[in-house]
Image 1 (tube, one colour):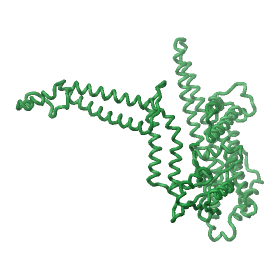
Image 2: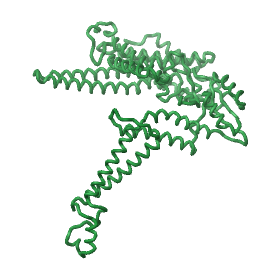
Image 3: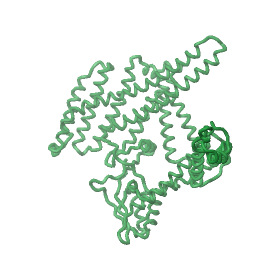
Image 4: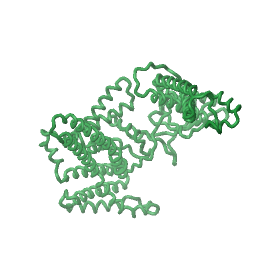
Length: 553
């Protein structure tokens, strides 16, 4: 569900502004709009965080792949000073190298002697091809100076490589908290001896906040959102489906406050889409193995976000392995003893009609859930009949789609009656009587929307097309690798062809694996956030609830 939000207006003594913000941060239940703060103190705090990030990048770049270095803890200022010195030395080195290249043709000579000769002997430049301007020192001294500069650069690089980036990273959350605190300070207005700030608080946190108000002597007003106000969205799905909130956060999406929480169907169908788009149980097993390693690696320092992502990947990869069992696809090949399984035979239909039927069936169930769910939520409003009518339209388009591609031999008579009743419900109950004058034009768009429902159902065929493409690409790379291995019968060349075969398999399956990940981002997300959401009425126009709280703990 989407948690109910209350608008907060809080008043405190201006002298206790910072103390009040500290207590609000410790409370961790108030959402403040920190994005509008752009003052000097905020810029300084952000600059400190940027310097810390730069220092870590400098350390890692200088260290490269070197291991076993003696690590020393240095401050960010020291690291940036070392880098500044290195940059100055590099500029001096470049200038000196240009000077050396300029005077190398003239050989090594004493510049002081040359200067005296030019003064004492008139017209010497006409006889000896000397440069127009003499160097600051002899060539040999310039090379010695260049060696000293290069040595100092090496020392600076060694200092950077031997610095402790982990010590800086440990302090970074505190820097982020400093930024948020300075942003919050800018939001606090002052009027005489009083200070005030506004924000949002979830209804379940009302009791805890009231206790804080009583304890600290604040003045507070909690009220329902007014017209035109847009509260943040806090999703609280059932515990089993809670990890999907990490996916929403990763995608940067949130339903609007007045819309529905679709986390349960999103999670369920995204899992199906993930498995079918990857399309290969071998890839699923690889993801599962990496996820298990992730569980093991983070066992002592696992954050809630990391746990959510690991849970998601465990479910998605397990579903992909299950799809591999049902379709007998493992790295583009099949296991012989699975070839006679009923599901394998059914999915391996040479005409691909069964696979398309499965995709269209998944699609119609997805879209009908959206419409029926919406109808149930407004069951006391006669417009619910329009939603049930849309469910009938979607079902009819499913039958039409299967008839078009030859899966069904035709459309049954009852379907036309159902479609007629559905159209009556859609046109008759989409708008209330008093809305016809202001929104009547929407009825004119209904024929186009009804036809687009056909496209929405057909759109789910991408699950079959992309998954099949992934399998075929894997099969072709397997064939290519085998042809390389079998390209010669000479025994002494077999090790070479074996290496070639392995390289083709690694590169081919690596590219295919990467493309599978891209297809998930494109197609699995689209089917949930576009096709399904259009029928459910979810615009994803909201912004996530982000309480003002410490992250460094």
